[in-house]
Image (tube, rainbow, N blue to C red):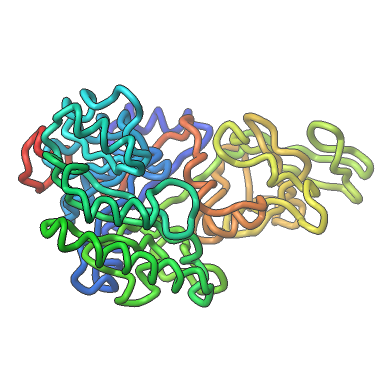
Length: 393
C-alpha cells in the first residue's frame, strides 16, 4: 500500500475489504459439488455489491467461462472487463436493444416468443438462451411455448440456442415440494427441446439448487450469493467462506447521564450512566435504518464489534452515522479513530440481514459507494482466460 492509499484510508469513514481468495475458494467448492456441470457465475448488481471488475477477473482466472448479469448495460460493463467471456443477460431482450447486444457480444436470455421474434428479425448472429417458467411465475415461457418451439422450426430459424434454462423458487429449503415440481416440469421441457437444439446446454440450479443433488445440475449451474459468502439455505449451516469485512470508524465518544437520549426521535434513553461510540456509517452505506434499536417489535436491532466486544446499536441509524453502546467495554478498549466491525468474522452478512428483517443478499447489494474498498490480494488487471472473441459471445 503506497502513502496515498494509506492517507486515503485514514480519511475514510468506512472501509470494505473484499477477500478475492475467498471468492475463489467458494467457486472451487461449488465446482466440486456440481460434479462435472459447468459452474457459471452470476455477477449482476456489481457482483452483488462487491465490485464487478475485480470479482469477474478473479473468477475468470479460476476458470469461469460464463457470466450472468441482469441487463444489457451491466453486460456492456462486463465486456470491458472480460473481452472473451460468455455473457448472458437475465432480464431478456428489451424492445429496440438488439444492436446493443450485437455491439457488445451479449447473449439475451429470451423469455417470450415476442422477444424471440424480435431477435430473429434483427438477424444478430449471436447465441441466445431460452428461459422457461416452471413455477416462479416471474419471467419465462410456458410448457406450451416449448411444444411450439419443438414443433415449428421457423420460430427459431437462423437463431442459435445455446442454453435452455429455468429458475428455482424454493431451493433454500431442500424439503420444499416446489423443488421437485419444478424439476419435473423442467425435465419435460428439456426432453422436448434437447432433440430440437442438440448443441444447447440445460440449466436449472442456482446456489441452493446445486445442493439439492445431481438431478438438478444438468449441464450448467448458476451460483450467485454463495460465491460472495452468503448463505443460500434456510435452517442449515453456511459452508461458504466469508468474503467481506465492513468497518466503520469511531469518530466520537459520548458520556450520557441517566435519562439522556440518543439520535433522531429520541427513541433510545440511557437507563444508567452510558458511554456511546459514534460510528461513521449509516444507511447511505448500506447499514440499514432497520438496524436501529427497537425498530421492530421483539427485535433488539443491530450489533457491531469493537475490539472483539459485541456492542448493540443505540437509537436510530441515520444517513451517515450509527451509535453503539460501549458502556460495558473497558475504558481503554475503544478510542476515537478505532474501527468497528459492521459485517465480518464476528457478525456475518446473513446475521446482519436477519437483524434487519431481510436477507444477506439485500445487505450485500446495498453496500454504499462511500466505503474505501480494499481487495486482498490486489487483483490482477488481465482480461481473464477465456478465448472466445469479442462479438462471438
